[in-house]
Length: 109
Image (tube, rainbow, N blue to C red; front, side):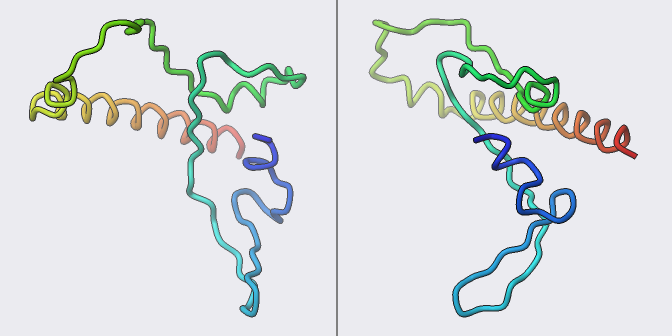
C-alpha cells in the first residue's frame, strides 16, 4: 500500500501526478502531502529492499502509561510551557526530515 501511495504508479515524473475530476479538465500537480501512521508494532512486509525501509521515520515511545489515568492530564499538557516544548520537539523533527529530504534529492542528481 505504501508504494502505491508514494511510488511512481500513475505519475509521469517524480512527485508530479495527473488528476482528472468528473466534468472538469485534467491537471497535473506536485504532491506535498506526508503520510503519518501510528502502530504498536512495525507492520510485516515481504518487501525487504532498502527503498522500502528508507521511507520510514520511526519515533519510539518507550513509556507505558496503562493504568495510570490522570483526570487533569489535558490541563497539564496544554499549559503554555508544555505547548512550547511540544512545538520545539516537532520543529526539530521537521528540520531533521527536511535535511534528510534535501540530502536524498541531491543524491538523486
